[in-house]
Picture (cartoon, rainbow, N blue to C red):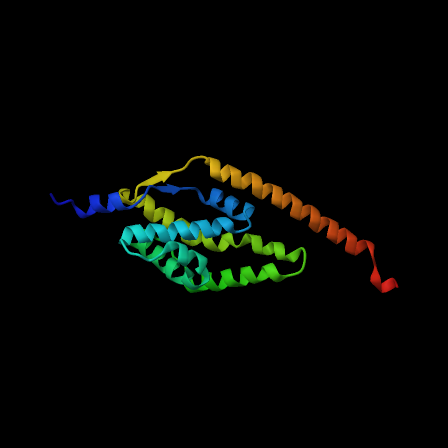
Amino acid sequence: MEQTNASTLENQIEPQYIISANKFALLCFITFGFYNAWWFYKSWRFFQQKENTDLAPAIRTIFGIVFMIPLFYRIINLAKRNGYDKTYSPVLLYILYLVAILFSYLPNPYWLISAFTFIILLPPFKALNFARLQNVTYNPIEQKSFNGRQIFLIVIGSLFWILILISTFVLVLANDEYNYEAY
């Protein structure tokens, strides 16, 4: 008995949990960009299952800086095929992402700018969500609230942010308190 191509595809692709752009932004920010890596992995995993290839999503995530442009192109092409009317430049997003990562090498407190790299990922994130929601064979499930793992990330990330902001504030005060030019 032969299955149709759509039902075969449906059996290959695991359920695609879709979160809102606001939740994505919060998770990326609160985890200092670690959620970015999770999103890269899940995106590559989706394409691996969709195309039935052995493209190794974990390797492509670890070496994400090399595979970012191809991922962005796959996302926009898939979204366009599903009726997405917006566009973005994968190469420009890649360059902006690199520059944003370089901000992490700035002195205290300016390195905190790098925590906003998720803004650069929003166009491909939205395009991929659109494409997955347009095709029921991709098993899209809109996630209305945070799941347990996401809540755990928010709690742990919040604690780290509190500690970092306190230490940054203490360092700024310490530098202001000691005027080395007076000696």
